[in-house]
Length: 299
View (cartoon, rainbow, N blue to C red):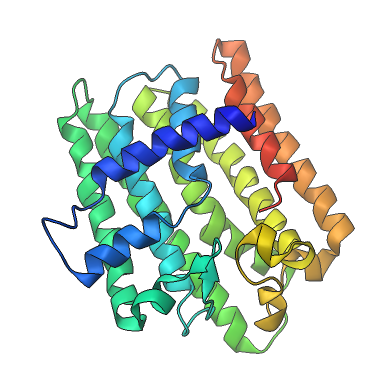
């Protein structure tokens, strides 16, 4: 499994590099900071989930590639802004200096803005890919915009900030709202876009959205657990940052044991939804194995 993930990650890296702005053509600190941020590493989970969901429903063309690059750019911009002193004030991510720590706050803000805008410039290139279905690409763009925007990821970030400043303890439903929008929304976008571009029917896309929600919540719960149990060397960023920022997490509300149990339950239910597509003739063993690997990841 590790070798398969490594191989797919390398392919995704090649796709990303093909779409990132050329520093020689447009030499500026903002462009360098954009590329630095994307190339700082990462699991490339969202483009991988997108590609594997595309394959699940029989997708074989290259129309998916601009969207794979675009969603990683959007995810990266959110991290760039999330690390800023005005937000989480983190100086390290994935073992490297965060963008603002490397280039300064002003350039980091512009780099995040640049990545968000460039993501949609990139996704629009799908229209010109050979064999592209115009309606599917348009629907995929709509999903990307919705899940990344004020009703999705940005909305979740806003709720997270409001919760920090309220001075009141979060309830479980409020925390789940934040996790659904801040974390799960982009995972939903990734998997839904993969399904849509491959031609999946509406009911299948809805099922994928449900499975992706559960994967996203489980992924965030594991993040909360790792913030308590991991080390800087394993995680590549300071541990205990949630406690430092007085954040209510799944662990603080439920405890590690219960949080871990619920994380496994969510993951297993999502896997069941994906495996049920086998009854319709859709199979992708790697996709289900990938979701399983999220349960035990250490970084």
